[in-house]
Image 1 (cartoon, rainbow, N blue to C red):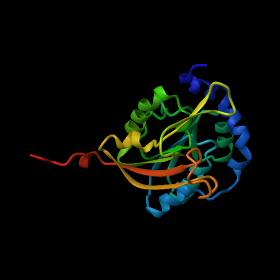
Image 2 (tube, one colour):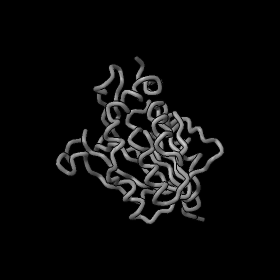
Image 3 (cartoon, helix red, strand yellow):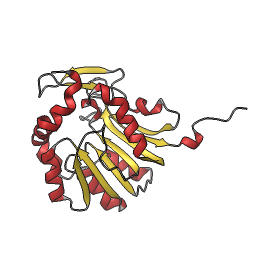
Image 4 (spheres, one colour):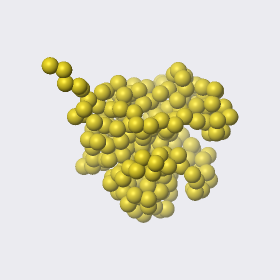
Length: 219
C-alpha cells in the first residue's frame, strides 16, 4: 500500500473500525481540555468546524456552552450517522481535512481533533490551505494532536501499510506570519507520567489569524 493512500483506507474501512474500537469512550461525558481552553481564553466563536469530529461530542459541548453553529467532518461514515442521530443541532458530513465540504461557510474556530497524525503527508499543505481559506480573519485554529520534540514515523498497529506521523503541527501554520501562537498545553494521555516519552507527548495548541499585523512596516 502506498503511504500516500491513507485517506482512502480511512474513508473506506479504517475510519469505521477506529470508531468501533473507541465507541464506548466517545459516547461517555468527559472533561475536555480543548473546551476548557476556550473557556479560559473567553472565546465566543459564532461558527465552529471540527475536523476529525467523530460523533460530534465536542461540538455538542461547544454548541451548548457558546450557542455556536457547529459543523463537523470525519472519515467514519458510521460515526457521522450515529452523531446525526444523537446531536440534531450539529451539521455532520463524512470527509477529510484536505477537502472541507461546507463551501458557503466561514468559521471563527477550526479544530483539528486528533487527526493530523494519520493524514497523508502529501496532503499537509492542502490541509493548511483549506483551513486558512475557511477561517475568518481574527479567527482561531485549535490543534489537538501528538507533539514529540522531533518528528516521528511509526507503524500504525491496527492496519498494515498505515503509518502515524507525530510532529508539531502548529508549525505548518506558524510558518506564515499571519498566524501566531496564543496558547499551548503539553501533556500525555497518562497525565504527566510519560511526559518524556516522545511517542506519548500530546498538545493542545491555540493559534490566531491576523493578516493585518503579519508584517511590521519598515520604510
